[in-house]
Each structure stands twice: as structure tokens, then as C-alpha cells.
Image 1 (cartoon, rainbow, N blue to C red):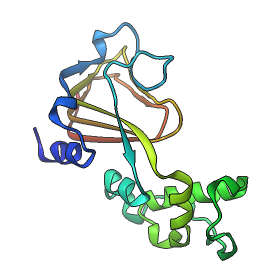
Image 2: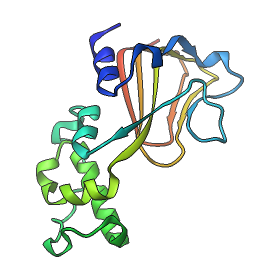
Image 3: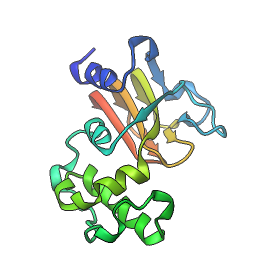
Image 4: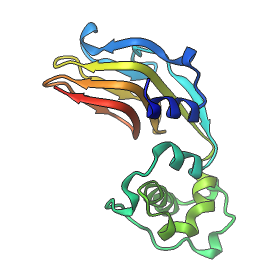
Length: 186
């Protein structure tokens, strides 16, 4: 197995025993193939539940996404009068601003939203995430891979090799953090 794959498994606290062995082939399913924690869908493999303690931990999982060049909204600085406010006391506008700050942080623009660090950690962390780890995935034409969580938390998917066959689709119904050592598009 490759370095990035093993490094990510270790970072997420997963052992080799928690990795689905072999190849998950979407064409082996009748219809779509789900990676899902939502009870309405049968997941092709079991998820491992992890806890992400802080925005810094989530940034480490996401990696150098964007390095500051993503076109993400940067909200006005967090008002000092709201410092120490609990997440339950945020109004709708506060929630939108804090979410925009989180997206900016993950997009490499943390310095521009530094005033939000405490509010982001207060609102979103600790965060539960369901991780799907599999050695190999092959996505076929008539059987899309659908990543469907129960809620809106990010879904880490880790695999050594991902092969996307002609016409294959990956549908993400949540923020997905996909770590792949080798991506093959046929």
C-alpha cells in the first residue's frame, strides 16, 4: 500500500483490520452502491466512527486544500462583543458567518478569518465523522458510488486505488474528504 494511504489511515486512527479488504466494485450491486451512515440506505461497507476534536485536526485531514486560492466567502470579522458566546446562542446570521469562516479555513484562508477560530471550534467541534476505508474501489457506468451521510458532517473516504470506468459517477451528498493514492480514469 502507498504512503499517502497508510499515512491517512494512521492519522484517522484506523488499523489495517478496520479497512475493507479487496476491491469494492460498484457493478457488483443492483443499482447504486452506497457508502452511507443513513439507515435508509444499505452501505456497501461498514464505517468507522471517529471524533475530530478541532478545526486544526480537520485541516490536517483535509490537507492543503486550495492553499488560499479557492473562491470561498470570507465573512466580516467576528465581533468582539460575541466572543465567548455559546453556539446555542448564535442566531441564523451568526451560524452562516461561522460556517463561511470554517469553509474559508479549510480553503486555506485561515489567516483572513482568525477572529472566528473560537466560534468555529465552539460551533462544530468535537465533530463525529464516519470514515470509509477500502483497499480499492472500481466505479462502473451504470452503478454510481453514492456517498450519503446521516447529517451534514464531512465523510472521509480512504482508498489505495480508485478506478473510474467510462461513464462511472461518484455522487457526494455531503462534504467528502477523499484520500486516494492512485486515481485511474479509464
